[in-house]
Length: 63
Image (cartoon, rainbow, N blue to C red; front, side, top):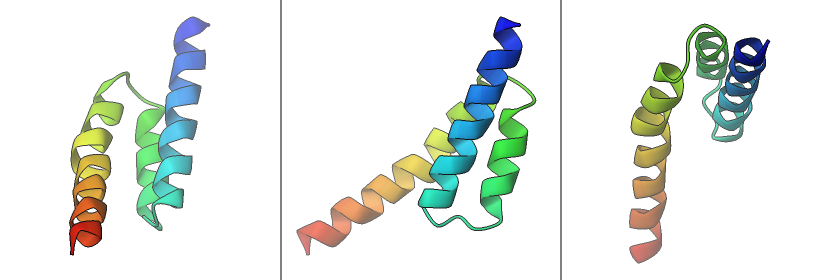
């Protein structure tokens, strides 16, 4: 039961955050992948979506 709750929370968080970041259809990919295993999708999401987005926003502010 705990694993199911963690997977549901992870999938929901990944989907909603990706949708808010403008990922479009990729948000569905992140959300569905987040429902399958823990914590690999969250780690990859942080590395390939959140960090580059954060760097891009930081670079945009410094100009």
